[in-house]
Image 1: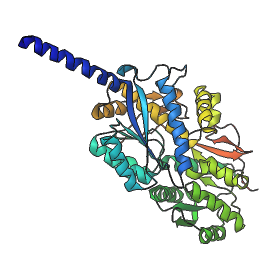
Image 2: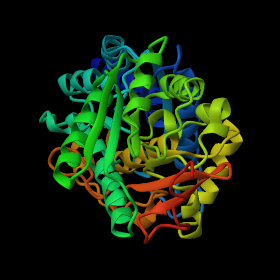
Image 3: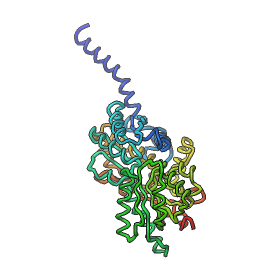
Image 4: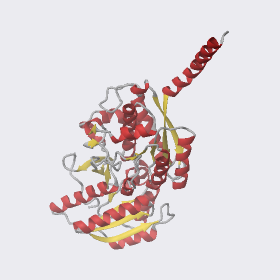
Amino acid sequence: MNRRELLLGGAAALSLAAAPRARAQAAEVPVGLIYPMSGANAQIAADARAAYETAAEVINTAMDLDLPMARSVGIPSLGGARLKLIFADHQADPQKGRSEAERLITQDKVCAIVGAYHSSVATTASVTCERYGVPFIAADSSSPSLHRRKLSYFFRPAAHDEMFSEAMFDFMDAQRKKGVKIETIALFHEDTIFGTDSAATQTKLAQERGYRIAADIKYRANSPSLTAEVQQLKSADADVLMPSSYTTDAILLVKTMAELGYRPRNIIAQAAGFSERALYDAVGDRLGGVITRSSFSIDLAAKRPAVARVNEIYRAKANRDLNDNTAREVMALLVLADAINRAKSTDGAKLREALAATDIPGEQTIMPWSRIRFGADGQNTSADPVLVQYVGGKWVTIFPEAAAIAAPVWPMNG
């Protein structure tokens, strides 16, 4: 064998050896999902897993749905590559979230990270993504400060708490115009970035719109007792209680209110624990008429047929309906897949550019949004919130009027 034959033979061997690896790389696109898989919020993560598996099913198999990536198999521009979901447990700890994000990027080679429920964890994980040039999609972390840090790789399709709070105050303003007495509010919020940002926004809006804050109570997240705090709420006797609490705290709050005989006339919640089934399984009989802000309403299925089909897939996995959190999670993965397809690459910079160019009409979502289009700060400003009320054991949309299917029950205990 001469030198030329040896070189050609070696090149051919290398080509054949490389081919299976290339095909393997094209067969799957790894995506990191970072959630509290253990601890007090493990059910949140279990529901999130079902939501992302639902979205992956829509993406990885062809379905006749008017949603991004639904009608194709996998990522067409990458030869039909399927999304591979890789979950990591941040344990509700911002520093654990940071280290898990780094592990997903450096060891699992994910092209993007989606998460993280807790805004405090989204804060640290997204900074890690920025450092490595990997997109971070904030599916369900709603602190307004997240998109104001001048990060290039941060994107949030859903609304943030200022947008949600504005909808809540718009609703109260509309009730006032109808002659309803709403003069005072009580703020009740946990002490992480979610609760403090929410309270700051609601304080500002109350001052601007002429509502007196009868109580502003910050409590320690995962507190073993809320007796003193609920006594303060009872003494304040505000027209509306506005809690910003995760699930375990929300359960403790409602149980403590019952023990102390405190029955708020109205509750308008900043979702989180108040959108979770675990709360209503535990104390639902005490929450008839509670109102919460939301990104999602199951009754939107009357206008957007994809809602019913996606909910059917999710329900088969989770044995419950989509809610505010899980619907946002489904859409986050669909948005990411759409960007990967347009980028024709999993390279971080190219994927970031494709995400920045996203433009999805509201009709092609399962949400009441008018559009998904990101500003320079990575925030979608067209993620229109709704308010839903828990009536007769189910959620109904009550605001805005254009989306409402029922008038609000007001007061909730009256």
